[in-house]
Figure 1 (cartoon, rainbow over the protein chains, first blue to last red):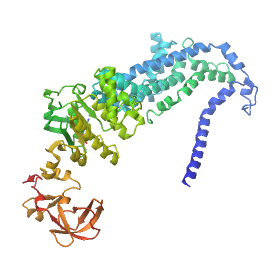
Figure 2: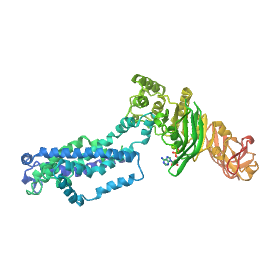
Figure 3: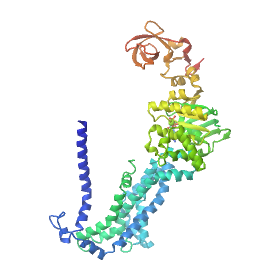
Figure 4: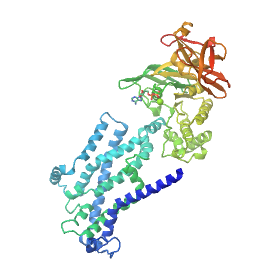
Length: 276
Length: 334
Ligand SMILES: Nc1ncnc2c1ncn2[C@@H]1O[C@H](COP(=O)(O)OP(=O)(O)O)[C@@H](O)[C@H]1O
Ligand SMILES: [Mg+2]
């Protein structure tokens, strides 16, 4: 009896989970499907789901018109670069906040988080002017710097929660076992922190890859990443849904593939270390 | 060697004094148990000896050398934590080998010692597993293995058995006592469980609010507790305390009598009462006797199976030479 209820409940939960999952994935799926339609079919009403003439012409046109590879490389450099730079700053910061906290540690953490509550447009003008004066507009360096700063609070928070999870007992055990500070860090702390650092890195690469406010506003041509590549197919030349979809698909494909292969790490990252 | 002396050791966290100045001498080879209620400062005292906390004032001398400012890694002590604190990313072998690696021993020497420890502790079958794949009891053994391989001058245990189930706890208790007999190394053992203290210790240190209430052998504490706190803390079930006119008869503010030192009768005795709950363990029978007209209910212990049932009227007589007398401050009157 009890078993029956459980299995029915399981079935319901499974169906609901798949439905929610599909609803979330649907816009992406629709984009991918649309990218294989002609422009006419892309705006056909009622919309066609699978019964249309499949074509690769959008991809061909997009590749002729824009330099996908250059945008792709810009995205890679900017997202990976800003992530590594952020980690370089965040690891020691989170380390000291987790293991040698002071009275103000919590306040500093909250203050850092509060900067994420400011709408970015609020500081667009000053940052734009600073970048112009420093010659950082439309440069990869400029974007690496700005994205590092944008994501730093989240990176520190994530690492902090991971480091907090490392039981102090274990570090103390290492001390009792005769480990010097250096050995303690090399043999005990770092190996235990690696999963946390890895998922922080992955999540931040994704955030930086998809960041569209600063990358669009601070670039023109040279340093423009894939977000700008997508944007160039939206308004100015009228609405070309199929081509826009093809560009979007090409822009998100690398990160989707990366996300697929690092699912386990990512789930840990997204739950901020709440589950083990 | 493993002789530890605490001289006027004091510890405060901020403004809160957790350990008021305290003196203690632990002899080489002794099994010393710190016992006391939760929060009384047992762990703090152990951590001060380990060097994981700095003393606020006073000195810690290990084997004649002042170790007060020596970092934990250099004190030559080994510690077993309540949480076991195994390295989760290392196999059992690597865990046990870690202190030896830190000491810079050769690979062959490390292997020899680890294999030896694994054999002694019955860990050979799990030696390549990670701690996460072990049961609580096995983890405990690994933690002990990690402590013994480097042959420390003393072992420090912080409630090592409190995460184990009752049966395993009794087993490990015996194993640790056995280990002490074989190694003859100083052991300092922290517990809140007075049964562990009584069964394992050569010397018990009873702590309350960071103060040492009494130091002595288990039977010393049992026979001549120096105050009411120790009298009530050591022994199970707890000692009965009686105040008022009955105590005055013995020229005391309070008298104490252990449940096993009350003779029970159905017909006559010094105090009369009605049996409330009675616990039949087979080997013993414990009865809680109410309505005694004394300051509180009494617990009596009778050997074997005794027909003490709810609602029965019983008479209790204390064995005269087993009565403990205390003054208003709770100090023993002799
Ligand atoms: N790091 C610390 N900071 C502040 N107070 C502490 C710290 N460690 C322990 N205490 C306090 O010291 C007292 C004794 O703690 P502890 O030694 O852990 O007790 P026990 O091990 O006997 O249960 C407790 O009141 C505890 O709150
Ligand atoms: Mg404790």
